[in-house]
Image 1 (cartoon, rainbow, N blue to C red):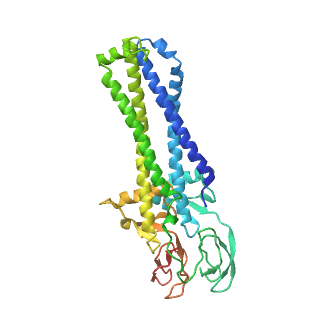
Image 2: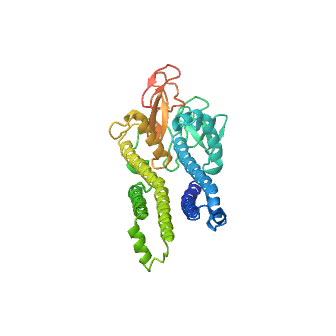
Image 3: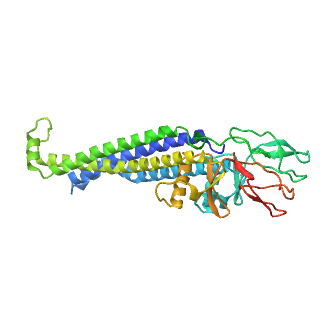
Length: 391
């Protein structure tokens, strides 16, 4: 609801293509320039006026800048996914920058700056001003169940009768999978596994290891070529056989040596150039596995909030590390319809939720502004259980 999804898909493709194109040009340009320096060492005029030199200078300056822009873009898209999940889980339509900053692990100033930029780049349907974000919504006509007054209420969010203070408003406000009306009984079943996962997550579980295997294959091939060339660098028998081989057309010792140097340099750049891609695949596989495990866990939970200490983990993984993986899975978009919130001083994962109680059973005062499963009455201070439940 708050993401420019089509634009984000285009930007993701742009980032992938641009990063691949830049890395290939950097590997090619740097390896050729190193070869020229070794081949013509001391002849700086020839090196400076070689055809490959201008391309090398261009990509060695522009390439890192492009890769930095791609990295920032990917990180910001991840933050946009996180903010979107937080906004979709909000019940009253207003989110403070301080709350968001604590949930995502940033300072409020950075969150405010990002939200202003993201409203232009990646997101929509909100305004950020004076340290808070107001989520946009159409209004609908509601009837107060308590006094019968007809009032206006923001769609998707809870409301309050301006006459009697009741929050039990009779309105059928439905949009997709989100329905925030208030009733006095719990209905519906717990959401299934697919509700919490990104589309095609199971395909990603297969595709990412395949891509990792392809990267590893080419790294091993380049490593083998490089080590073979390195082992032959001082091998007189190899030089002799190569000079006598009419198919290789290398007519001198120097040409053979420079050919080996070129192979060593190219292999090294391919090997180290693919290493970040391999590490990226490993990280993504870890996050997909985290999203898969959490989605299975969330589908069994009957309450709307899960403390970070209760999240399943492998071995003795600390709660902070476990929550960090969950946050990163949310930022990648692998884990949906949940967000990280802090209530009563405890960091928790909030699932899709709705309010099911509208008045205090002790004094009858209206329940307003409930955001957590338990609520303390503002009039009699009684603690009311299960005000907010899993949707």
